[in-house]
Image 1: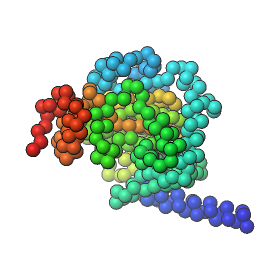
Image 2: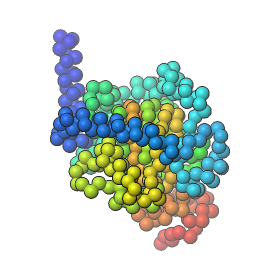
Image 3: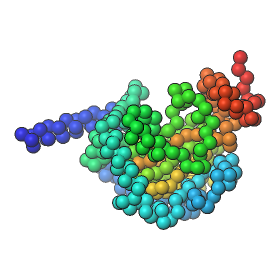
Image 4: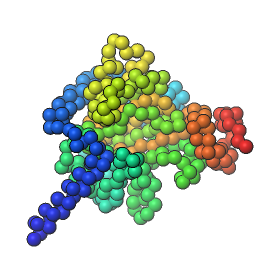
Length: 355
C-alpha cells in the first residue's frame, strides 16, 4: 500500500509539472528527440567556444577589497562600464566547498521555503504561473527540457511572514556596499515597480536578451552554480540583435546563443557593437549599467539574487525616462524625494514640472 501511494503521488506530481511546463513553454509539444540532442550538442560547443575567447573579450573583474565605493562609482557607474566584483581568491575557493557558510544558508533557505509557490513564467495570456519550490527542485532533477523552466520570483524578496524566513531573505538580498544608494527606495514598496528577484534555474535555462526598465542599473549576486553573460553597448540597434525569423524558439536564450550570436563574430558586424563576455562564479557580483543589453545563460544549475537600483550616477537617465514613460510614477516619486529632502539632484530640479 505504501509503495502504491508513493507511486500515485509521483504520477500526480509529474502531471502537475507537465501542466506547468506546457503552460509556460507551449512549444515543448513540438520538439523532437533529434532537435533536443542537436541543440544540446550545439549549445555545449558554443559555451566552450565562449570560454576559450572570454579572456580577450571579458568584462573586467575586480576584487571587492581592492576598490573603494567612490572609485567604483567614478570609474564604473559614471562611465557605464560593466564589471564583475569578485571575492578574494581564498574566499571564492571556500565558497564552493560543501561546508561553506553560503551553501549551508542556501540549503536552509531551500528547506524553509520548499512548500512556497514561486513564479516560473507566464502563460500565453500574461498570467503568472507558479510552482512549489520542492516540486521545481524535483523538476530540475527528473526533467531535461530543451527549453528549461526558470524561477524568476519577485515575491520572496518581500517576505513578511515568519521572522526566521524574513531575516534569512534580508541577509540574502543585502546589497553589496557599492550599491547601497538607491533613490527609488524613497517610494513606498506598494508604489515602486518590481525591483528585486530570486532566480533558480537548471543548466541551459536563463533570461533572453533585454535592457532593464526605465534606465535602471542592476547587480546580480550568484550564490550557487555558474552563469555566462553576453552584453551589448546601449547604442547597439535593437534590430541587429533580433531574429529575422518568426519562430518563437529564437526568443529562448539557448537558441539565441546558437543561431544569433555567430552573427556578432562576422566581419560585417560593427566593432562598436561587439559584445562583452563574462563567466560568473559563486560569490561574484555582476554589475550591469543603465542601458546595456544583456543575456544570461545558466551553464550549471544556478541560484542567484538580483536587484535594480537608481544611484546618483544614473538618476538623470532614470528620472527622464520615468517622466516620459510613467508620468504618474514620476509624480509619486517627486513627492517622495521632496518629502525626504532630496531636492539637490540636478535632473530633478530642472527636469519635470507637475501641475
